[in-house]
Image (tube, rainbow, N blue to C red; front, side):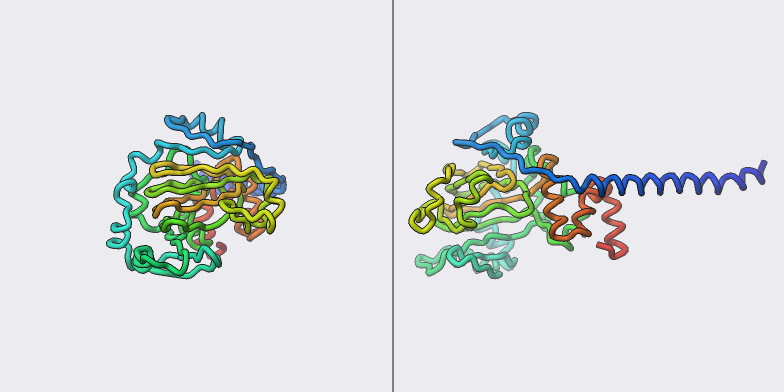
Length: 318
């Protein structure tokens, strides 16, 4: 019996290993075939934007996320420490030496600047430029990330990708924006067909939204939607912009490929996150595949099997 057990045991283990390997190969082939399918952008036209409180997750999915419709949520950040903790003085004291990315709102040129230097600039009575701190990445700043929690509506499936992989490929979905009155990043839509939620910690903003089908009217974002020059951009006369004010304590979710123009009408601090869910995941994956096929094809697998991302990163494949 001992001889028979020692004889059959390795064969059984080899058979199990072979079956697991075969299953993995078949799954990979089916996956790569499935990846070739194309997905279309889902969106819903609006004439005004909804403001919702006590919104359930099922309602958010049914009425907004699954149909590509923007919404303002008025009560999703009421328990955040950031709501009262994140002030100009807080960032000067705690993060004055940290370097963020500043953008010239007129030329759209970007340059590094410390938080303290930018806040000093904000206090100037006369400024010859409109500068906004448009990116202070918080991906690896655990102290700041503990001051808020992404609302239940915005569960980013890309968070399942190992942190080391996201860092290497510069996927930093969350960042803080600080801007003085009249600054604006300009009309644009977000890359890779990602959703974006924007939370106003302090201040007030004026926002213009245009649905994805109106891209032909906005001249690649060159139009100033708050003061459009119709002689220079005549097609904008055909556009149907939705304009509204976003105030402290409110969060807006902007679905994929919606054009948006946000202007500070008061000094403000804002938190912004990009994210993906199952309704836009396919077009997100396709976008990443175009940028980097090796990584793009693996993203869904890393989401399903995070250990795979860790293993591929460890051996240097990613």
